[in-house]
Image (cartoon, rainbow, N blue to C red):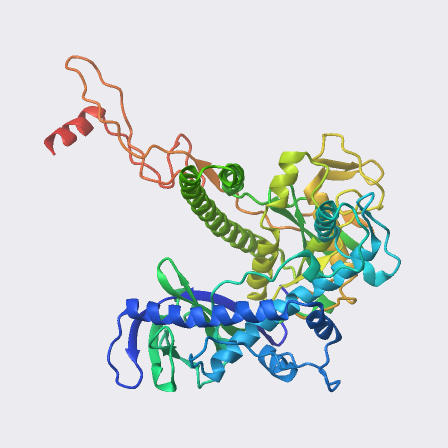
Length: 601
């Protein structure tokens, strides 16, 4: 890898839990159950005021103000949500007689402004698409202005909403629609983002791998005065993998409650090496695949132009993709069954309706558990993929990793099963994890156009043939080819190297290359990419069969296998004749000795 530039800043998040709680004024210890109760009272106040404020501001005038970005005096709205809400006069309401500090009001308004600003884009898109929608045919007219373009997947979802609304109104022509006409106020979860407040509500200190959070919590469900808000000092342990990291800033956490109690969602900013995209000479292209998560290939720029060995590495998900498909099928089955019981409960007698509602609640709980499990597997899959690609790029000496632009990537034409599986893959989680992991070693991640990456030859830019089916690619003119995903990765790496001087950066998004340039990529006989380690998965026996040999009969020789998991990874190559697991077994012992030793115990 080339020499990294000046240090850059990278933000990341982690979770932890408090294990000690004391009263900040008296120093008396507080039980964690009492802390959970007091945090629950705080979240109830915030969630109730937030829901009431969203329903009150759910009108077109709100989104007009946010789209304009100015207040009544024509001044630009600040980025801080609570400051912008105060300037616009948007304040939350609380129950009568309840006292809430002004810093808690900052948290409420900041969370409401974040939700409304996120939905402002959807409101503008719905208003533009409603003018091009024909209720009679259910189709959209082509856009006339460049600003009217929206992602096709987003447009299809809005068209489904338009069609359902036209069906409810008997296809009557409508005027310009807004988001308030299509859906109700968003449902938010109970949380408290302390980052919107100052030290009067919460502050944090970190010493010796221990984080101490001091936060003001209510002592009753409906506090009536300032005396019923007291400071609590929470002590939590910082995860081991963060010890010794060059962290410059520790941010205030977000408070949430789950089935285990109080959870602190923390964030921090650390220093990482910076990479100059303009001087990149080696790139890794990551192509998303419908069969697996992705494949990575290298391309380099030399004195004779771009070269690549067209041999990459395909990610092995260790069976997690199959598990995700099974959980998705199970969740869809639970959804269909709950929907059917809901339809039956609508016309059932009161006694039967009560029983059906209990069954529906159980099904919803199971479906929620399946969704949580899928989220955990997706996160594990994304970071495992990111680590493998980052290690591959580091071994190849790459300075940039190119990924396909997900806004233009659609899953269609591969059959119902493959389309569904590819659409549910954790691609966006993988991109976020890849950008986070690669920044640690000074490698930049950019998005490049995806169109034609799997269909055109990297050498002559002509259409490829498929002599071996969908997963193969061959160019008869350049006489290059191989795996379809590997050829696409070469195209993506080429576009990153050719467009490294025209990178556009937007807040909250990856650096992007908008135009796909072409230059021939010569196939190099020399090896330009690293050889990844290919672990082998073997199923092994967990226990020794308890067989008592019969007298006078020569028993079979049972050789016990060491304990290992089902997905045991064998990294070293075993010696000749050894078919064991991770370690080399000693010389096999006769089964008689094994049986005698078991009998003596």
